[in-house]
Length: 95
Image 1 (cartoon, rainbow, N blue to C red):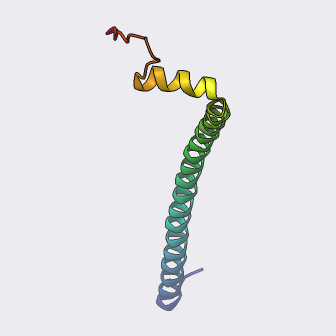
Image 2 (tube, helix red, strand yellow; image 1 turned 180 degrees about the vertical axis):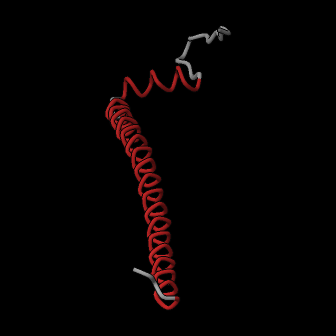
């Protein structure tokens, strides 16, 4: 069977149209998946930061509870800010 010039042109136009559509869908899909992967990585990083913040919150809540005790607060102030009781001498030792 012989194809006429009109049939060849029609086949060429359809082939080009299909190629353009498939190319567009390929680029669109690639961009979509790259965004999904970037979001997945960002989600993992944020979950890690969230866990660290929860850990910090537990430590700080524990510290708040301890600082409500007057004896612990006095000891903490003496160690951290080098306050002393009457008659005490503070000696600083470099590590």
